[in-house]
Image 1: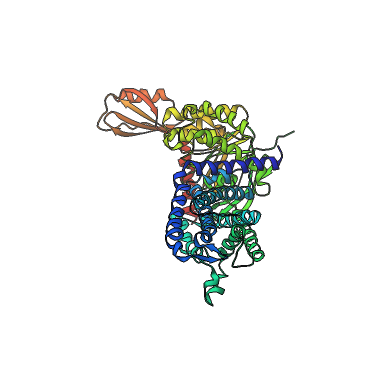
Image 2: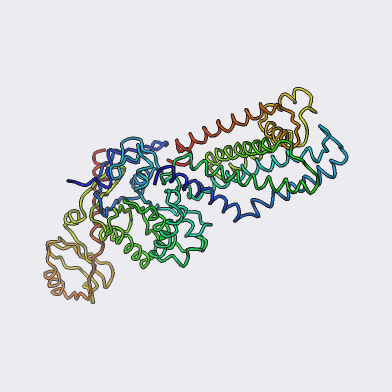
Length: 259
Length: 314
């Protein structure tokens, strides 16, 4: 059997195992984001949003926040999936099954990222389905919509993997979502247009990578964005490449994995 | 024509980041088809050596070759040849034994159909097939150990490394595990075993290396090593014992309790004269057994001898 064929089998094994895990604990992986986002839609979209009226480009507040909330649930779930799954494997030492195998590092990384992206996309589709119960949407640019959500999911899967590699205890994988991810998400234009901010806050907001993901996705769905979509894709691709290099280097050096 | 050794360890060194020097340049060779014992006290460096061979530990120097394939330079190719049964349980306890085995095969690039056939074969051979679809966490300790052996066999390795596989396992299961591993070895798989149950090593292994403080203090055949043992200690159950033990030439007697004696004597000393002398002093022996197994006796002497030598040198 060639190395390529063997690597594909190994990749398929990791992805399959990750998806089985997501489905096995569906009450932890799929239901909570659906409930949380339903509450966001009811409270922010319906109750408060009905008093705000249109916000940008003639869209209702409910329509405006849908792309941001979909992207928020995608990146949160990608991050949570890969960080808990990979750290869990480290904690139980089950990761050694992979480390002692002939599988190259990139297969391990790609397998875990694919599993996390799969959960992110399923949750994103569920949240979008729930949103359609509250409002109507017409996807303006389907390809940009898909590409932006895919890149956003990949970035946060890679970031979650790096976090899990460094984590020594379960608290360590909760720190980043609590103190970095959540503030950046809320300040990343999910609920408002950064054009509503005065300077220097508007300029500062452009240092937030989540702003580019949310706006690229919003451009794909609604056709409006606070940032140049081309710049947004360059930023996202830059993060994918940069984080992939970091993750592969960590695996190569065996940081937190090999003595 | 000589065959390629199953394992060549060449001047292997490991110093951990905290400064502990776990391996101080060890070298050894294991021939194909061998059943090789790697013994040593806790912290001697056995698990570090196994960690390097299985690529879980990065070496600080030297190299190891598995059937001629360098663990450092051709990691993937070397790993295809090795099956590892680690000391600690290291599978996802929420998965099913069947899935654990099939996934393991997948990591080695073995297609799912073949993996499923092998999983059935090895789970049946290790008497786990009826537990194949249960969550692994519900298995007993012995079953979990057997599951790790089944998992290690999924890539049908040429070199099987067992790191204390029977720790905490009852004697019946231990024997069934050894039957399985002996059969694997008889079929051609080279086996390296570390264990603290020295009677296992004595009965199963043909060659032996003893590690202590990161160096190999003995590396020879089991037969040759056992032949060096010149003293044996017997435990004697007796019907009656005088208040003062007799002094017998060439034998050291020690009282363990009212009905039990220990007799330490040279291996060349014949037992008939011992029984005759005891009988003369009114001591009647009802049964007798070896105090320790022979390898254990040697192991303790070698390790303690090495330490005493170091203390004197210091």
